[in-house]
Amino acid sequence: MARATLRGMRRLFPSSVPPAVPTAPVDPEAPISRPETASPAGPSGSDDRQWTLEEIAEAYAYPAGASKEPWLRGNMVASLDGAAHHQGRSQPLSSDPDMRIFGVLRALADAVVVGAETVRKEGYRPARAREAFAARRAAAGQPPAPAIAVVSASLDLDFSLPLFTEPLTPTLLITGAAAPADRQAAAREAGAVVVHAGEGAAVDPARVPALLAEHGHTRLLTEGGPRLLGRFAAAGVLDELCLTVSPRIAGGDASRVTDGPGLETPLEYRLHSVLEEGGFLFTCYRRSGAAPGAR
Ligand SMILES: NC(=O)c1ccc[n+]([C@@H]2O[C@H](COP(=O)([O-])OP(=O)(O)OC[C@H]3O[C@@H](n4cnc5c(N)ncnc54)[C@H](OP(=O)(O)O)[C@@H]3O)[C@@H](O)[C@H]2O)c1
Image (cartoon, rainbow, N blue to C red):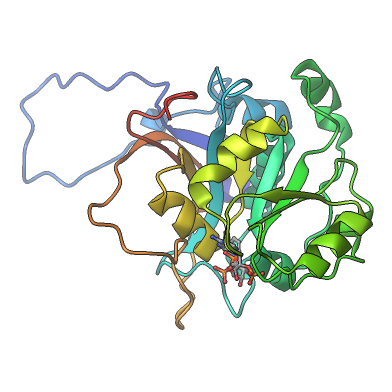
């Protein structure tokens, strides 16, 4: 079997390999070569094996302080040409390693915040409890599974679905106070916790992290979709973006990972980490100056 097919996940940044010190003057005409031995390695020095869930969890640990103050992390996948979905689904852009990281990010979160359109399009179900994370979650004071928090103004959602009726941790419905009263009642009837984050029907995204913190959820993960993520970013509350770059070209006119209001000045994020497996880049950027409790 070719070596390339054996390769597991490897960390590209931060590198565990110290930069080589040039011993001779650099020839600017020389071709760029990246010897195999210089490639950054995985957590235990090997880059030819699958990382354990525990190692991935360590790589994506929330910053210290996020157990007390809200920290909003986004997780999205984009194609090489910037598409956030292919024919309405993100799955064609994803891969097994991407789904493994997706699952770990969920397992680290108190609550998963998601826009109603993604719930409708992707058929969201309650998050499940995973044995592999049971001890870690218990030690962090978390229930066995994260809550799902759905953001909606229309409340055009099927409240008879397991997402609302059968979650391990009650599903939250984040909406505005003036959203349809009968639909709010139906959500409560189904077992959802209705949270008002606006006076009209719409949600003020800037208020969401603090409101979720009031419900005991500070380690926050948003899985989009693009319209919700764009609003979180524009409101200045997106602390971190874990963006998977998929080695695929989707074409078409799918939105980017944010699809929201224009910003006067682009927001600055700094690179926190990059992993790679199978040609997929698992990047993680944190907002410059962001720290739990900084807002
Ligand atoms: N690439 C990825 O990683 C990724 C991740 C997630 C989703 N996706 C894809 O993205 C597509 C869906 O994304 P999308 O951008 O169309 O929708 P979305 O962001 O998932 O949901 C938009 C909906 O969220 C609610 N919403 C958003 N902001 C709100 C606010 N401020 N106040 C109240 N409600 C608010 C509204 O729901 P109501 O209409 O109910 O009022 C709105 O229609 C799907 O095709 C999905 O596959 C891709």
